[in-house]
Image 1 (cartoon, chains in turn purple, green):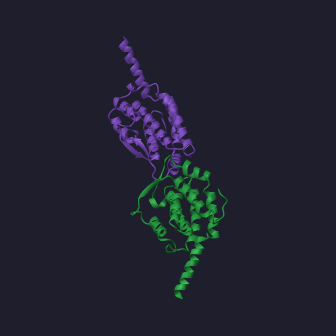
Image 2 (image 1 turned 120 degrees about the vertical axis):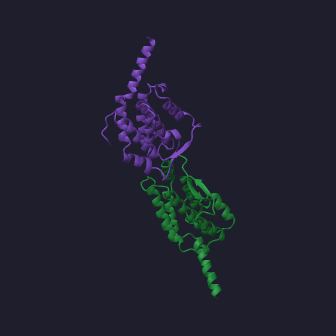
Image 3 (image 1 turned 90 degrees about the vertical axis):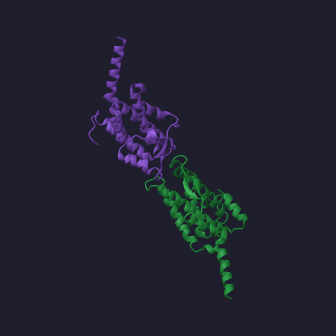
Length: 180
Length: 180
């Protein structure tokens, strides 16, 4: 009886994750507006020195091709969204770390951070045990001190380009966005 | 007779160099306004990523201590100003090289460049043979491809800090600036 109850709870939790909550859709829609091309170009390219890169961990770069590979390995959509959230919020922090408060891109990254913070509340109810091991391990690596991971130099705009592309892959369907 | 004439010309040229022409005083005064602390701080520090550096040649860093050393080696004041001009205009170019045209510091560096271009006309009448060998060699190194020289990572603001400090050392007296 106890076991059956646990199983039902687990199924509900998984269903909940699969379906993208209304809060997630609303917040990622706001993120999409904030990540439009003109803004990424201005704040993440024109306002940085030419060829400037930030150092990130290897796992902090999440490209559409990574998602395709993980999907083929039958990772659930919910776990992929969970991964995207952790990678992307970390990427924005990496960019913020290199900006003085009076830098003209600072406020932009702050607004992105606020949206990710709000999104974090949506994800805070899920524990790492709710997602596939491969995803749980990746998320753990992102927050580890980085000793175990290789480092990579990435342009700030490239980090946000990936964030947006992967977000569209993962939320476009469940949130019924028009193709953009 | 021919020799005597050449000697007189040489003395005149040296005298002309020693005395800082009115054009030099006017232009360096404008440069001083443009290099005031608030502007250097905003355009060269706040508008760059934290700890950002540009690569310059070893000879492209000219500090007050270098001037003191060269003065002790009895390099003429005129030759020191000639050296300062070449080092500083090159430093501004190094900063400009890393900035996209839409960067918020771009216009500022353009205005500095225009002042250095105007100052260049003042110096164009002097040839490298008019200055002491030690200075002529330093200036030659600045414009060489850099193969012979060591490279150095310097913050953009530090380049302009040095430019201003040395300018005050070299032009403050001859141009009768109030102590600033």
